[in-house]
Length: 600
Image (tube, rainbow, N blue to C red):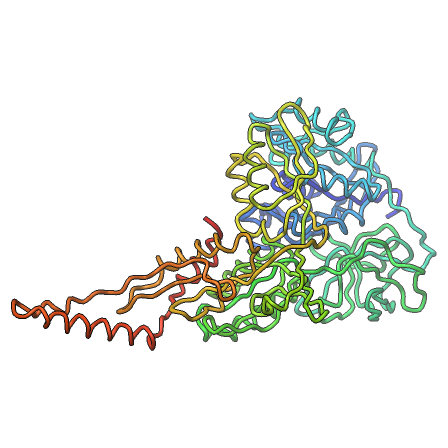
């Protein structure tokens, strides 16, 4: 195919604005899937993606298209993940394209992620086509969308294309717009090979399948390639294009989107955003924008039954074959046994891993409370990174501490602005800007600690705004803070699985919530059980599980009162001795109530 007839584009939007549904209509229009094999969200391979209506793994597909002028075109669609956790993958998909379809829900209008994704596309100098989706709905408000496209996005509203991805309305006009307005790819066929990796997945028989966009040069079977970041070299075994199924080709040239296989056994050797070049004739410099993916949220996963540890270990190995961003190492807990400490890209990534372990591998697991990585300067001059309460040093040895901050962008109707500001202030946010987009909507930007959005922030934001607020964030830097280790003691003994690193000002409130929940879940014993929250040697919260009472004086009828006193004193002494030597077994429901409950 001549490069003049190739168009590379991606679809970007806020969550649930219809990216996957529009991709379905493109594929149906190209007649790439037989009717008997059709299912919705055909590019989403995971059940959890279809159920939640989100894209977790970005996909690519090459669409044949005959335009109105009779010319044949090759449209390379790179579908993008829809959640802020995967924003880096979105940026690499955008970097592999010349055009972007900016999808806007006709009932919701421009939202937070719409803006951030558009800025990303503008930074990469993409041709942006605004697309107003869901025009078939009774609540569609085209006038509102026109105003927001002009005022919020700075684009020409008259260039917007109207579609209903669900019904297929306007899809033909949108494809024609892609052909007319997205420029063909550029690149030098004679230059050294320069290709961008925008995704990868694991084939159990062939090894890693690498998704690439070729910018310069040619890539043929038999070529020896080099991965820029680690210098690893491989012999290319197969190249081709994505046509739902893999379509083998003789070569990929500048401008093509496709795949390569080179017998790569470990997916962690291939990093999203990295550059591939020819080993014997390398390019002078890599493509810009590459950075190693670093986990930002940490949590430990334990099997509910200790006998399932081996199955959990095998499941984690299989998951990492297709998810290079999942980082884990062995962990152990006195209460929960052996497990794994994991690093995730965000809360959604953590939920996806948890659900896949439970569904695909039929495991019952306990996931500890999520935390972030703190930078601690110690009194001896050493600086350490701590992401687990078990590694938290003694408070007296800490000179200063820093925690990761985010820049949160929240769009909300003006009537809910007070509730949103109160929530952000409660979460230690500092307002940086407030911008009224129009008479009914306002955008507020807050700098706040990443740790504060881990505990039900998104749910509470939707609650206080009646579902209308939208939220997007990006990591910024580390800032000074004061954190402490909160220990939970049951009958005077610390339960390591319930320890948390918390902001010093919130330690008392968090301890009270946990103690109340444990009081409800711990079964009563023959003696009183104190449940305490402690910061160092200071007790900051306490609840008591009352003892089961046996009436030892029931057999006494009349007689001297000293007899009853002796029996009660004997019972009291027995309970005191039992409390000293008795062991309180915490049920799994107690752990789950604390670990899943968040804040009240």
